[in-house]
Length: 331
Image 1 (cartoon, rainbow, N blue to C red):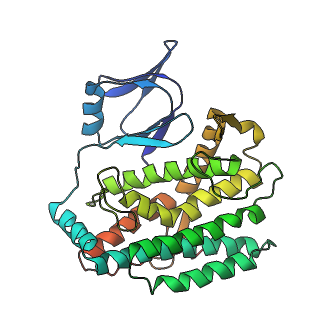
Image 2: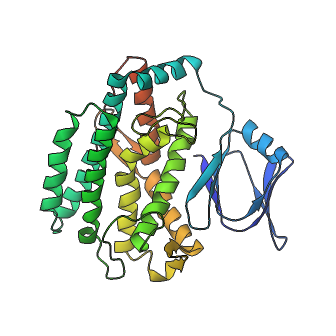
Image 3: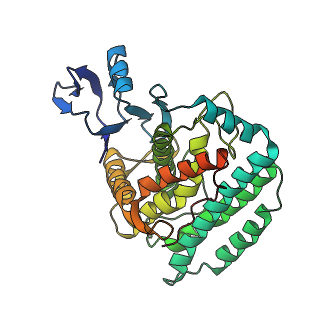
């Protein structure tokens, strides 16, 4: 299994022979084998050079940067080894044609909403008072099929997310984690800090999986394609944030894996300490490597594999081999 490494310290990352070495500010060296290395996340202040970048590109290793507060900054995305001009044309056709674009965008919102409902029903069955939240989300899901414009779809998606986030106060069993509303720029409390950090990681994880397909991450459908950023990873992440990210958040809080001491405050914001980030990353990696059985194929697959499979479904949709339907949790 390919490995992801996370670097929190400041120092220098460089190539040494046919491997990598990280040198901390106090001169300590740590060798990093590249044979099974998939991706590097950088949180500290790192020096690197062109020779390293060329080596990472050759080895198809992506490197993502997050700032001190845990926000995604950007990625070095190796040259496209699998990009297909034919597939890019198909992606563009489905973006330019409003009927084709709105179909994909609606399916993404529907998938995210129904996965959110699965989470809420799970906790309702364990005694949480979530009936009103579930009913409101169900009412808004019904509206999705009748929408024909992206701005209107985004409004309904925003409404569903608002209702869903309001349920977090019922789900989380801790007086140290009070949640009233989503506040992300900057995070206004500990739960918002966890949500923002989790989302940043998932965006980058999905981006890496896109890199392993023939798809171009610059062409999204729910999130507009523009000059500033990747957008397909933002689209696909919507489906997986509830079932991977949010479930991890509930787990680390309710099991007391992460507590008050794992957060810091500064500049009117709350954010995870390095220790808190490490704890959350470990829990998220465990979730990504956990397997579930899919009835359709009759075997167990990891959550990380589910992301790749979702992208393959999009490829089939663009090639008109199979109409795209989003992953809805069945376990």
